[in-house]
Image 1 (cartoon, one colour):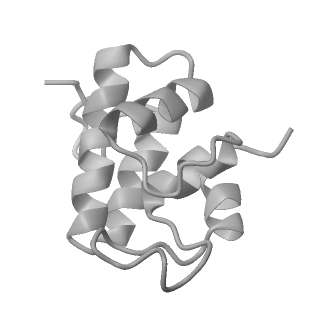
Image 2 (cartoon, one colour; image 1 turned 135 degrees about the vertical axis):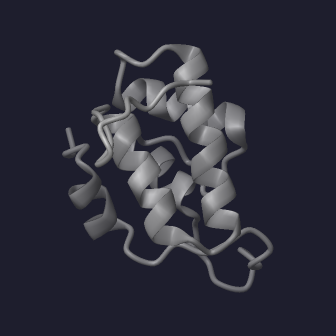
Length: 109
């Protein structure tokens, strides 16, 4: 089974694209959410929030469905704004929930 750390996933999928980028023009293109899905062997290169939620639950079964959906929404939003580092940061928090740098717990609200 492949490693499911963000570093390992980023190493396998280092060049995500934003929504609106034509996946037809570059075979195998994906977004950050797609990289997460592909790391779970789900062939969703451009997942919607529901699909990404399922992949996040595979990657971290301790997440509630609500929290996974919250992260999926933020990952997709950041990716679509071409804020890839932010999308990866949300992905890292989803896989390994912790308090952020300011000491506030990330919540699903």
